[in-house]
Image 1 (cartoon, each protein chain N blue to C red):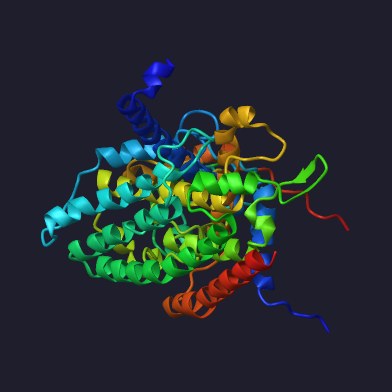
Image 2: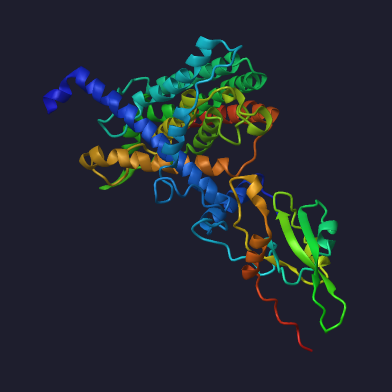
Length: 155
Length: 341
């Protein structure tokens, strides 16, 4: 049976803080040193404009409605002579308001054509809240920071 | 040079200027130490950018920030009392340094009743705290002020009683006399003399009681009920801003300095270190005392960032049921030992 000395808890507490004092802090000096983020971190959402078909699924599934999409149909010339002209959806506007976004990732999950990707980039804070609305060009820019997906496990 | 120093008034001005410069300076160092040590105890880095390396200028920057703030007085406050309270607190803290011996000669005034003076002037700050709490016209301030009053009165007793043991053993109340008594050999075998501070001469209980009571007097965690951010906003400091808040803040850390200096002098031998001659101590004395003070201040900071706050009734029980009887026993034991040995 272990003997319990009165006040042993006080000594234990002191020992714990002293040990922590001697250890390296787990926080880092943020602007000077940077954390290495994990590849699958949910930093920002990138858009591949070529893959997007303006299906609006992401905008509809978004729980806080932070995705704004506008588009129009353009008639394509027929593929063969004498054929019927086909319509093609073109993206005019694709904005994500990061002031509203809650990083749930439902839009990325729901996109049927893999036009949306998670990027681990996180340094896009702004002085003005309106600047958190990232437009199509900026979302496309984030594509550069999307890491290549890991190889599938081979059997 | 020595003729200049023999003039009473010049010497007095020199001493006052020295105290007025050294005490806030050391307080700033302790504030910085607290920032850094608390950060590392919580596995953080703490201030880093102010002043370049390690953020050493953080307390200075904080001080500048406080000076720029508006000196607010609440509409319902008792203005003269409200404005005077921080001065009383800071004054009582700094007045203690009159009797703190930094070296055999570097002492503002070696009073015969030095210990008595220190305890009397030190408890004068209670009035300032009560003034601040009452005049702020704020319920949190009032609660904080009342708690502080109850706490400071309760812990004044063990503080005084703990010191009595040392006074009995030294046979004098002059602080320089107490240091000299600790410099005297306990026993001698030929040329070999053993000189011990009072902590190692059986005043362990006395030191423990003095240290706990000191924490309570300084309103430091685990006895920080008068300030208690999570219950009383900031207690009696709630309505203070700007320079007046800075004065309270400075008084807290200067109080840590003064109380630690007294504790170091009474129990740890003050400026004396065995093995050094008096000529060396003349210059090394202040450094030795500061080393001992830093040790105690580290202990205070360490306690603050380890222990949670006590409840008000637990605080009173600790003082009246444990510390005061123990201190009385300590006095009896010391007196018996003094007479018998």
